[in-house]
Length: 92
View 1: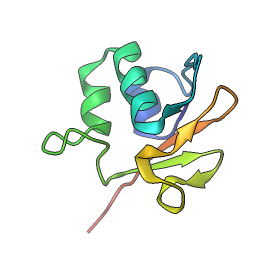
View 2 (view 1 turned 30 degrees about the vertical axis):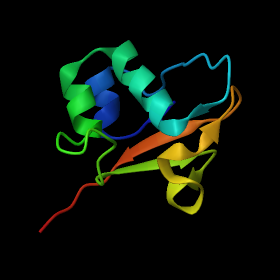
View 3 (view 1 turned 180 degrees about the vertical axis):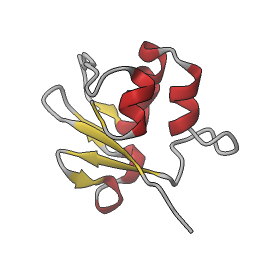
């Protein structure tokens, strides 16, 4: 999994490995990464506290394709797929 922007700083690295022995949903993979990194601020930056799912401020790509044009967080991944998490910063 590739981490962009503030997520890199929070995790202390720009990539995190995840062994997928079977096909899994993107949401499951993100949950496993949050547990693997085990830094509360990292999880808070990704997971919306109300919905308990990936927040609208995170763009999720699978193999450089936005999951919104796939099957969203239900998109299935395999061991050779790459997930990228991109935080969206809004200014005003």
